[in-house]
Length: 406
View (tube, rainbow, N blue to C red):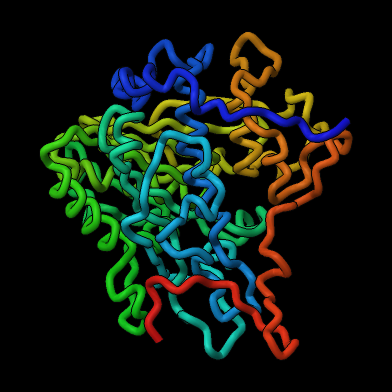
């Protein structure tokens, strides 16, 4: 049996998405849309999931490279380079890259360090991007959408065992909380979000300060249009997206426009006071997509509370995937999107309701059944970025210049 070839599904029924985008963004907490999963919401979730997946596809995790920890691709033509531009009417352009560091030790799965003495940065990592809908994208989406996508972890799940789940106060950025209940969040998420480093040209300001400044700018630029702010991320990126979403609305940067986080495989972010703060904020919605067999959404186990609405998928029910899978494939982002495409909710079973290419599941893992003849972990740079020069020598050239000044 060969590869299942499918046609793009984005071309159908886009008018319905443009007309009901507020409901798809959770205006009514997705009431009546999650089980069974509404077809437009299914497409919508996959759209934002692909924008989160793009953070992995551009990230350079090759420690032999001087650009380890950076984005391979420049902002120009970013979506084309990561393969989510063709045949899709939801058009965006990247306006800003986000960089993060941490003032406390965190697992290498979060912050990659280059082995090169000429590394682009010893302190910082590329952590995501801000993008805004083009005029064409605005027509398809029904409004001017500002997207913030946060990168997740880039290695195996061993980081769960290496990470301490300490809580720290977030009052400095989120305020005192409800009825004086000081909101607390995970120390690691908070450090990556708020840390700066005067030695790094990329983190003289924190990731938080970078993203909030760009949100302020874009909200001002498009103040005469109907706008939305949508955040997305997977794993660590999901936690950062949730924290960022609460931060934006708690501090009024959205100017009343709806803020929605559509996140995947998210660990828990904060304590019960953080949950109370979240629940009391208007114009803020979070949809947490989680795979039934994935352990990460259950972490940390003690002292933390879930926020938002849940959408459960179960990739073990897919006839396309090896059974039963393993912790790595259960946590994989492309597997999550496959799960969204086929979940049947409480009806049980699995059926692809949107024609999403199944080969994508094997992009960075070994999850598809062998009969589909899709190579394992097939997405990689040609020759891992090694380029032959005119004299016959080989040179590692795995980065497009953009924000860098040497």
